Length: 131
Image 1: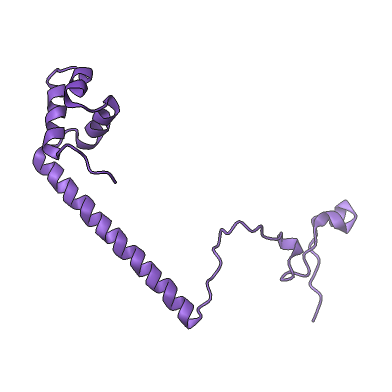
Image 2 (image 1 turned 120 degrees about the vertical axis):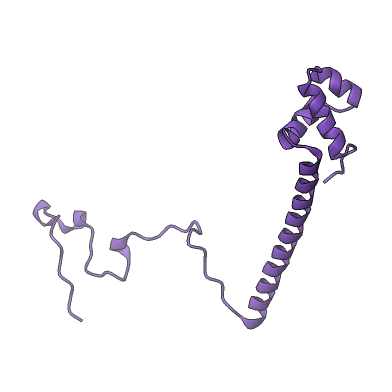
């Protein structure tokens, strides 16, 4: 991410000037940044003082380090699974359509009611065949 030309102290100063009544267009022209940048800063730093902004920067850098460590741990796990030959389980929601229950081989006695012929037997359950 690109480093800002302005420090947190300067950004909070710009926001305070706008809160004091200075028009945003004029503030942006004098500061040399766009309206969109000002509103982005106001969304991020609005209501903060300098101490809070520094704490936010520290937390963001700590969060980035932790994300990097997590990514490395996932790579290590993936490499170890590859070395030891652990098969991956397919994801439950892989997008593959499941067969309907009446078409599966696990329930041989279940047949769609429409294929039985008469409406009287449409609600009946056929008994399982003995093995």
